[in-house]
Amino acid sequence: MTVQVAPPAVGAAQDLQAAGQRQSRWLVVAEQECRDLWTSGRGLILLFLFSVLLSGITYLTSTNQALNFLEQRESVNLVLQFAVAVGVLATLVVSADGISGERERGTLETLLVTPVPRRSIIGGKLVAALSLWFATFLVSIPYVWVLARGVGILGAALALGFCVGTLVAVGLGSIGLLISGASNSNKTSIAASLFLLLILFAPSQLPSGLPQGWFFEVLLRANPVASGLAYISSILVEGHGWTQDLALLITPLLTAIVAGGALLIAGPRLVRLTRGVNAG
Amino acid sequence: MRVVLLIALLVGALTWLSAPALAAAPLSVRVVNEPAHVETVLGGRFMITTEITNAGAAPSGEILAHLNIASIEGSVYVDPEDWSPNRSQQLSLQPGESQKLTWEIQAVNAGHFAAYVAVMPFGDKLAGEEALVISPLVAVDVATKSTLTAGGALPVVVTVPLLLGLAASGVFFRGHRRGSDR
Image (cartoon, rainbow over all chains, first blue to last red; front, side):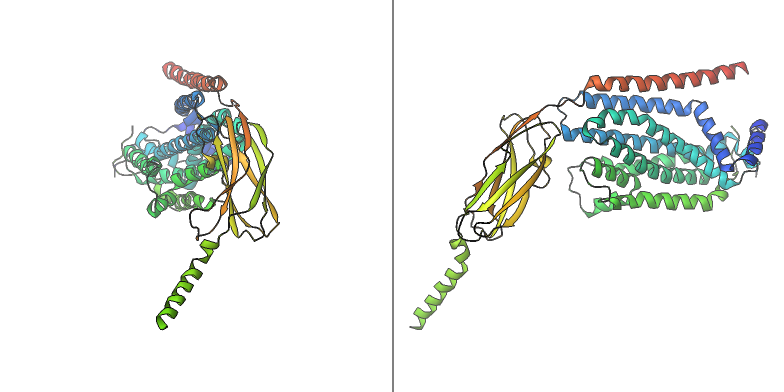
């Protein structure tokens, strides 16, 4: 087995070692990963692009003269769903790069020689990926405020977006890390994750006029993204109570628990060097 | 004799079977709405109370009160479901008895509208020609309330990407400069 790795970043490894003794080790990994994500500009560029898209949607919605009161609730729903979708996408992509990316860049060996348990590495990486979702949510707050302040659903919209988005992001972030750990190449990992996301978003693109029988209902409820978004719509647009459609949150919750649990159990075995991976 | 008896029995049975339809007396209820005039703004919630009184000498049986809303300008499309999700209420009244029904309404279009309540017999044994009892109209004037304007959204739409773009380019160029220094 030939494993080529880049020259170890001694400074970073020592930093990790020293810091690891002081704080929770997963927190050290999370801090390091977040620093890498945010100070490299990757995270900020993604947020900038996201804000441009959100600005476009918000402006188009605001200039629509035919918008009546109920449709304004729908525009809040649209912006919130878009924020959740993009936030989850970003989390999935970052987590899909988490382990396979380190392998390909040849930095995983450096990380493995630090006195940080592999489970902490996984935990830290998940938290760093989730930071992108939290940032996406923060950026979407002013847009939701602009649209929701007139219809009195600002608090509900933000609380809903945060709870549902976090639940879905934890589930899909965990799945992304599992895929990343199991993939030999970063391209495979990211392609598989994006394909998964595409499958999960597909039901939301079906024309709403189609007759929706039991099969559609099963499809909706089995899908953590679609059912999470349907829960948001049921409260914001249809005016249902928070507990009325709570069953829609079962799949996102189960996904978070099952994928998070699988990550916790199988994670240490996934964070390893694999055959034939070249250093970048 | 036997044939005559059979015919008489048959006629009697048919008469008995069709008795409810033929004997369905016209509804003698009185319907009054309150208030008669509502002024609100777009998105405003208000309530209409309808008092239904059985003015007849017989019990009303099962009756249905149904709220409807119509635009009196003609140019505004009205979907009454949007105005009030619960537009039907079922009741039955004894002679002289009256009952107050409340309707929660939200104004979802701007303009001039009329709300009214139609009372009709309820059940699956309707002949199809029963008369309705209609309440007097409630005039509903809804003023526009522009909560969503391009001007209102513009500061956020421009400022957020601008700030994030500046931050991203600042971080990017700082990293680029560091890379060049090395």
